[in-house]
Image (tube, rainbow, N blue to C red):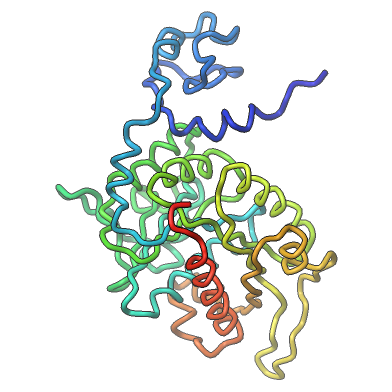
Length: 336
């Protein structure tokens, strides 16, 4: 019989809630995990320098959870932006969604970039060269405008080209710091941009935010089946993790010619696209945002596409997505 690929689902979902012990050596290849109930007791633990530490480490809830909950008490809505597949424009969509929310000057918006190994949000928001200011109140996010702020590991790197080569526990620790130590203040929306997949970062963010009231997740996909295949896994993850799915967005949904205004399907929806998937899975469909070459240019230059081309088909579609998303948020009991 082949070895199981995954640890029990409930163990994996609960693990980030536990305090990670201070280890004296790297975890061995078949380590059950220092936060596991089998820590220090498995056959892989024999001879490991961490065995005594792991066996005696407390297995109860992480004591930082109440601190995080208190720190985030001034944030009305917390939304995860997820995608099963990389390259679907999730981070680009996050920045456009943030600009769309921030278009209302009465709303304060924040973006937390948890894509630790590929932090692209600062570049897209035009604040790549900024650094974090630390005060007695905590870490201050970088402000893009009067009502739009960002926090990312990119602000902590000596060079923008430096790679972040971290294992899960260190990435989880940074995500916790972004929630526990950053002085977000009073926000109407906190958008959490995540890396593709269903792994450490997603488990940690969900566990850390659950007590403070996570509104839910927006799932981003492109029309083709190869993307939808992974989105189905993301839907399954959300349901197992108890994350409300606020809706599914089809990004890069066709291209509208700037001259004749004729729509072209660049990535054809061979199996019906996001709308069909939403219907078959019972997930709200928030809408489709078409391709526009100017979106890529705006991201490269760190400018707001939403402000510069507000009458474009993409911005019109995005405004409709925002309206449906706000309706879904209003329908979901906060913190449920």
